[in-house]
Image 1 (cartoon, rainbow, N blue to C red):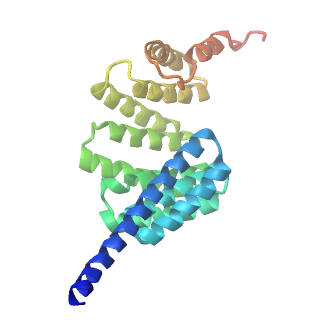
Image 2 (spheres, rainbow, N blue to C red):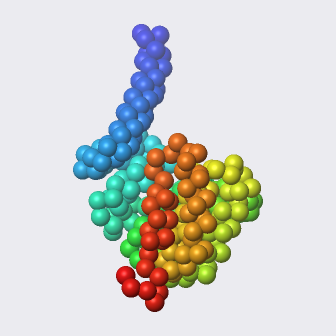
Image 3 (cartoon, helix red, strand yellow):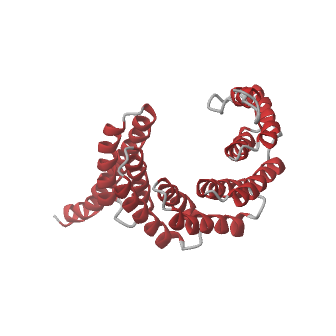
Length: 253
């Protein structure tokens, strides 16, 4: 009997570990399903699955675990996509709090959560709240990765987009140009990433009717498109044609 008791004591933690492993596998399955449903555009079902994933994450890992933060971010993205902006903001803030507690307030690991929250605030035209968050993400990346890292270029592009939305064109232009310079240092001349930033700067010029500045950027963008297999790039040729065919000031349309 004593031997049986010892075996029982050993089996209990093994069974607990097995259940935990099963729950983790199920959470990973739900997480993958959420991503698949989101890509398919089935946001309603993605939301339900993401809610299940969040509940399981909190049960399996605890409410202050990185996987729980990931589930919060996933559900927050779906809420944002479905226009449930206040609910999304609440979840993004929860995810950021968890990430800060686990990694530290100045860790590169929290940048994704910072960007998610800033993008949401920007979408709600809460520019004054979004700006310090974008700046914080940029400062963290510059400090830990150096000023010429490609991820710094992404943060510069994000902040430039905010300035463009606010009408702070000169500040946006400066940041877009710096982002492009970083890409040119790190990537091949025809990198799609460089092309995306070129497109953003060209769009900024077009919004101010500075077409002469936009045209060479769009022409370069067109060359990148021709040499890239990417299919989601802006149609630079169509934009160039529109610019060329626009009515000139002082002429009849």
